[in-house]
Image (cartoon, rainbow, N blue to C red; front, side, top):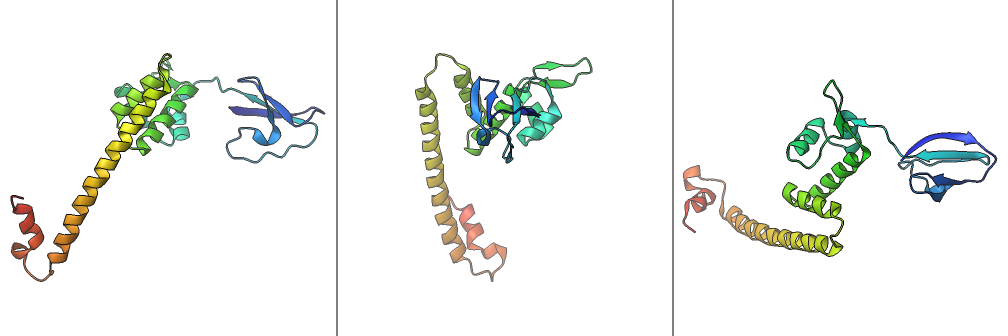
Length: 183
């Protein structure tokens, strides 16, 4: 949503969100964290952003670089809405939402293939939320197993570090010797 402007009007401080027809109180307006102080007689017009976005604007808004967007295009996670005659990519607002989805899923440790699967579930009209829950639960189990393996590795490394006296030559190093063993 984009705030298009303020108009003096003599009305109250409730506003129509034209994207879905709901009324918003002045304090509930989606202005990206800004505080809006309205006096009596002002109203804000909130309209959906319909104009296409260039790759640079999408990258900046999503907090990624342009090469990341191109990579996601090659991996078929994202597609430009259209291209200008000059070859510039143009994107709709849903591309920005998809980029945020991808980045948030990556922060939770999902691979790009898992993200592709989640995006397919998201766009599938007849898919239940239970399928998404199953994938998230399986991913949580995988993370738990990785944590357990990492903790076991840490325990071994701590023991090896404790055996090293830091005095001898590398040929006598217990850490290096243990890496050569058949265990």
